[in-house]
Image 1 (tube, rainbow, N blue to C red):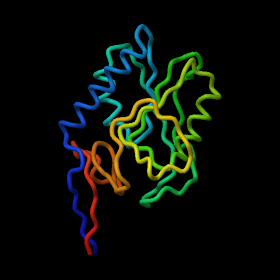
Image 2: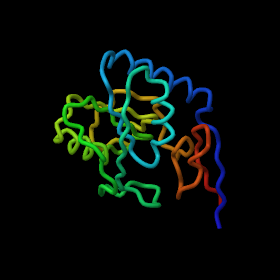
Image 3: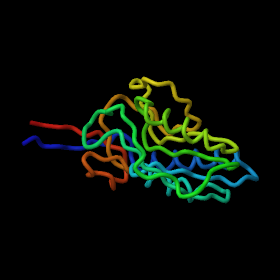
Image 4: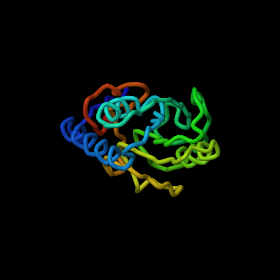
Length: 176
């Protein structure tokens, strides 16, 4: 039985400061417009709600769930939609919100599918980015933190459904 421990990578205060900065930039960029936030479940829930509270514009929320991971630590590369949007995005300004982007497979698939639904505009916001893991080129409009290739948890990110509620970003370590 291996033991797990978590070390802090990005403290809670830094995460909150960064979310405020991103929200200010989004508020400027979409001034005078209404924004539809699409939260990618489940990992992005914490980030999406904190961000939405700080955006100084009318925002609407919708949710999507896509599966490419399961309980494994590496992306399977297969994407399937588990829960689709409740409402149309046609003619709306859409901001897709992710907790983390690594290979880019899932996001690339998702963005193409959403573009086909004819939003007025579509942009991508992620709390964490692991560019060293990128396989598919994905343009990220708003990035919280670029991080090294570590297995991270907290602030919505999980390992087998655990550690999501940590108020900081941590690195998960496995000890034998």
